[in-house]
Amino acid sequence: VFNNKRLKQNPKVAQAFVSAWYDAMEMIKNSETRQEAIIIMSDLAGTKPAEFNKMLEGTDLFLDPQRAIDFLNSEEIRKTEKKVVKFAQSHGLINDEVNLKYNTTVIQTVRPMK
Image 1 (spheres, rainbow, N blue to C red):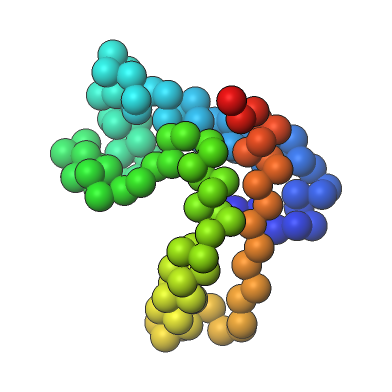
Image 2 (cartoon, rainbow, N blue to C red):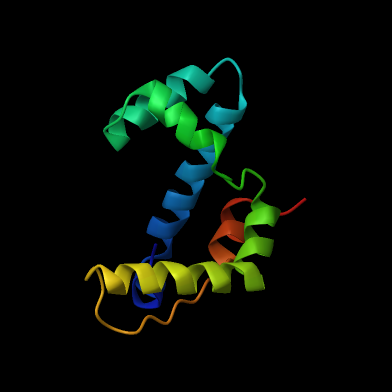
């Protein structure tokens, strides 16, 4: 979401972004606030809550920060990113080669591991 230059210039923006993500995920996990979160998120995504709920069924939200870090350090994400880059290039969404790197320090800063 943030390139290295932007991350170095203003790490607090990235920290706020990650913090907001995990705050939103807390709302999704909590049965008392889940529906409110889905209404807000579906509106921002330009879809209906029922459609957003269906999307959630097939999506790993990485609610646990350690799982997110493990995934970002895995071979699985490398395989997935190759497919995504190939798709984006074949549809003219990107033209250049992409060199993605994943910096997990922001996650660790915002959500210290237990």
